Image 1 (cartoon, rainbow, N blue to C red):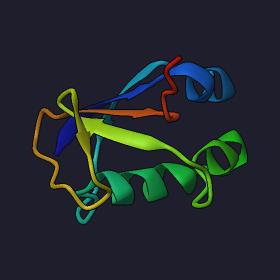
Image 2: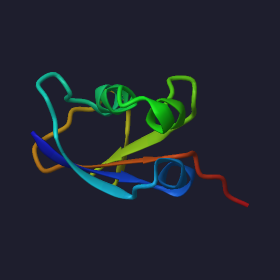
Image 3: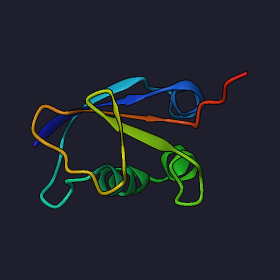
Image 4: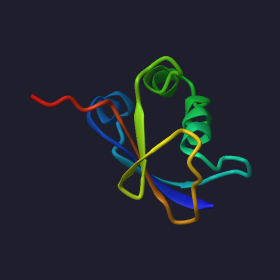
Length: 85
């Protein structure tokens, strides 16, 4: 499955990348599994996407739960929580 992954705000700064095209291996089929797979890169990836960090996900521009299904061609965005004021 091919997807586009976007990183916003502090994640973009920590990882040094704003967009990445990924060919996902079998079994990486939810935002939660994608996040865990990206964490396996280690270093800044492991820190920025750590399990205890509050990171939100969106699939095709709609907020998505960690267990939401992904599909070929999906756009997945990871970003910190947004606060208003």
